[in-house]
Length: 275
Image (cartoon, rainbow, N blue to C red; front, side, top):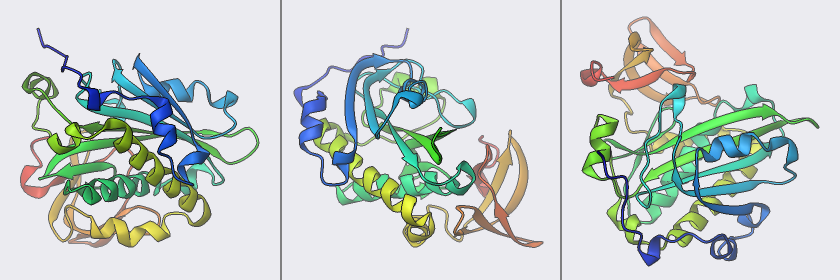
């Protein structure tokens, strides 16, 4: 049986009051909640959207039913990961928010790089360290009754990954031992402040301001890749970058093709069989 526990150290304790005290001007727009355990912070906030009047950050010390893109399971271990969701009401329609997952990735990557953890971005919503997944992003939306769109952005960030959990996941994943030793409240506050600023900026100007920042962090820039849909290759080409809507621009034998995120996945061309 897999041991899903990691000894919780003082630096790993998360407290809502501590996170609130570390918010900057952008972060103070967000209410903060911390729970010891829940199924999914995304599901919790999605169920409460009709009752929300301002942005809410919900952090769980442990998630028992975390979710990733395309209905995949997000495996977690208590104390080994930072799992949280941010609910934010955007002025745009859901269709105008296609680039938002990429903007969220930029915010997370820039915080981690500033903390000395070198990361890159894999289109459309993964944060990579040394070519392996360190963090994932799940964006869910719902129409707001008074206009605009409620967005719930769920993030899972690997800090310490036991060998047993990596075996359960079925592939190598990254971890960040340096971040694991950092005060979790400070780390969470830095991420919250960056995300709050990102949502505010995206609400005003869309994805365009984030485009050069995302392309500068592109893990597979100018590399041969394949695009898979439910395990089948639908495109091959050279990854060029993204456009102002967040589509991946792929140089194929037939010319340049914009690829919508949806449920498709990107893989390096020499790793296309490992899906």
